[in-house]
Image (cartoon, rainbow over all chains, first blue to last red):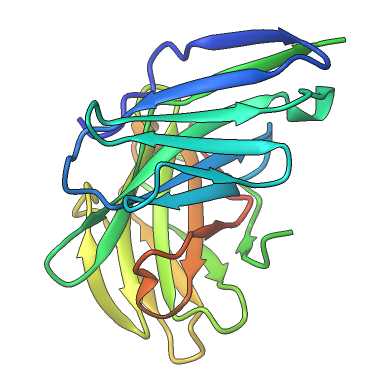
Length: 114
Length: 114
């Protein structure tokens, strides 16, 4: 299937530490990737995106790294805060005949310990 | 706030019934997407509309249908409901064509089928 939402991996980090969340994508032809954050009771919230002609992109406290050779994405969060606790999803754009869709990974739970 | 509005927030109904979920996209966005999120399947793409026309279809059941109206709001109709249809249903919107632009999600409708 495209997105398997079974047992989500969990990353527990201490407040103030850096977090690294990893994602493997499936389609080598994908050229646009997005990280989303989903808090309980809310919809996925856009964090940062990256195009395939880039290896790295930085935002505020977040950095996304793209390794096309091994089809791997990572999201780095600097100085992790309690408010960063959420489920994080990577998503890749998939083009269809007349439209397109975002295909989501399974997600990673980030827990920040104070 | 993503600017995408979904109603209702919660819906409880019985098997065999029919429901309609409503979505208002962000101002200026022409493309609307519907996703289903369940515990065992993650975020699954259902269907995309662009400026009133269906553009891409995912794993949408024949019992489900959607449309996008001239004012760009969209409705997802779920009929002959089964217990397994219980899930969170998200609407997302994006700018023209949605190529290489992020989707912005609403906070979803939680559907419970009893």
